[in-house]
Amino acid sequence: MGKPRYHRVVLKLSGEALAGNTGFGIHPPVIKALSEELKEVHDLGIELSIVVGGGNIWRGQTGEELGMDRSQADYMGMLATVMNGLALQDALENLGVPTRVQTAVEMQKVAEPYIRRRAIRHLEKGRIVIFTGGTGSPYFSTDTTSALRAAEIGADVILMAKNNVDGVYSDDPRENKEAVKYDSLTYLDIINKSLKVMDTTASTMSMDNKIPLVVFNLNEPGNIKKAILGEPIGTEIN
Image (tube, rainbow, N blue to C red; front, side):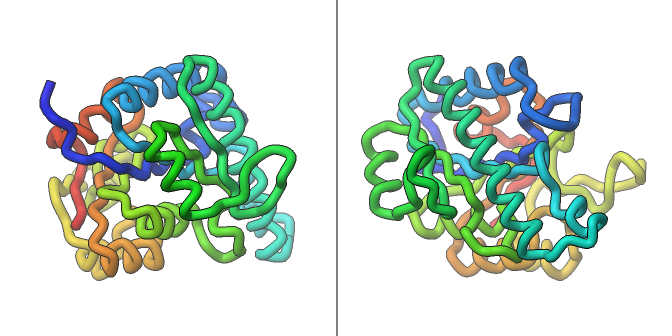
């Protein structure tokens, strides 16, 4: 096994990654298998942090359909990410992996408030840090949270784990069989071509802070470890 390419990592997980084929909620076999992969990565000595979404519990689109105020719907989404973070923490600690959940929406009974220096210290002590609650403000996605936290903690890379998509394509490969997969791109390519990788705010922030992004298929066992080792999977963006 080669030497890890990255030492301090932000892994972006969608909420749907915890739901499996059910599409909603938290599917125990899925979160267990994911936690086992994360333990393997942790055992390499990697400083691993995770930003988790909430789409398996609540989606902003649902709020729109209900005629809900955008801010209210976004705050509900932030709470969903905390639920996912606590579930992931429990699964990891059942495997003996030390973790801390930090949330940008303060709730002292269940998680630490997000404090940058404390997060870095946890990482240095070998704990996986799970960032929840988004940025703490509406109108910002968890993609933006990933870019923001990566910049704040000085991460070497953002790993964006996608469900059943093995990289970035010129179009949706499930709908367009002629869609072309990119092995590498720049952030300007993403912005100029309006590629659906991460939102523009997140792309700009990552570009400004020179944080590389690797997009890969989460559903292929072992891919998280391969991405950290620097194996050519998915699409690399600089």
